[in-house]
Image (cartoon, rainbow, N blue to C red; front, side, top):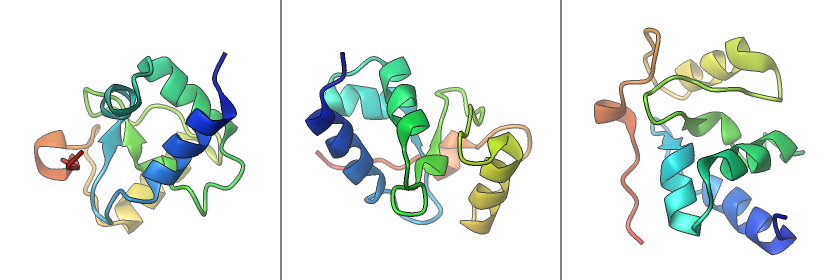
Length: 101
């Protein structure tokens, strides 16, 4: 069971991801000691994607993953609008956000 306060911390963390950068489900999971699938669950429950930009979270291999607020096409569109160039995947060497704990 995911505690509401943990879910809120994860959502607030999304607001810190700079424009033109992404985080991975795994990196967020590592930060909050959660399995990456639980991070995905938090993203899928995000009722305010305009406030908490879950579109900036991708898989560890650079694939987009899902997006409950409009599908993968919408996620790709939002990432491109945010300044991230896409081929089939996000280039994590270029766009992965390396936050300081």
